[in-house]
Length: 198
Ligand SMILES: N[C@@H](CCC(=O)N[C@@H](CS)C(=O)NCC(=O)O)C(=O)O
Image (cartoon, rainbow, N blue to C red; front, side, top):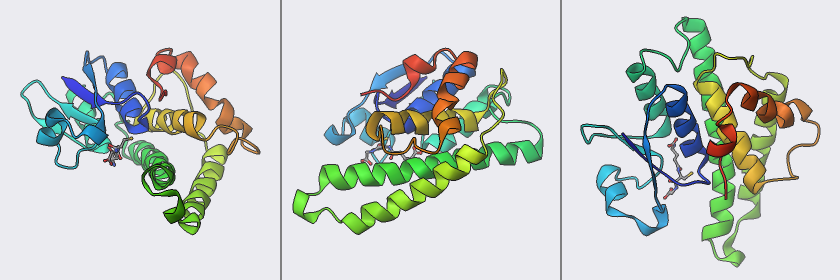
């Protein structure tokens, strides 16, 4: 299996961590989405990472479809079997990914628009979603122990991206959330190596 990824990508970090946790030996292929490389575009018309290419050459995207694929392939090792707990894990993943979407919208607004066209109210609107979501996460952190699930990896992707691109802008008043990666790394030592990095 191959995973097309980039080191800074939070969704890529999530699926690479999850694949490792499930015991899959995936080849990670560094991919520059801005260059529209053939392998990416021919596999995923959206031109987004992560994109997983399985051993039969089938492309799987986006990151949530990849997580469900890994769960099935691993014999249901990535999400709880209990229906209620599974819903809880999937909701945590949805909240973390949704928050990451807002952060990415902010980064792209600043990166891809000419400076005089950057629309501050749009950035503020995205940031207010981020703030609400981080408060909710700080007050409702998942139980974190040896048995992990997809929600934990989504949270690790989100917090890694915040540390990378928004350092000093979100931590105040959220000590539990800020300290969570250290706790998580005790149960998942590969965190430091696989988290989003610049
Ligand atoms: N919903 C998608 C989002 C993926 C995504 O937006 N990835 C970014 C990198 S972190 C990307 O590929 N951006 C390039 C682009 O949108 O053209 C997922 O969960 O996989």
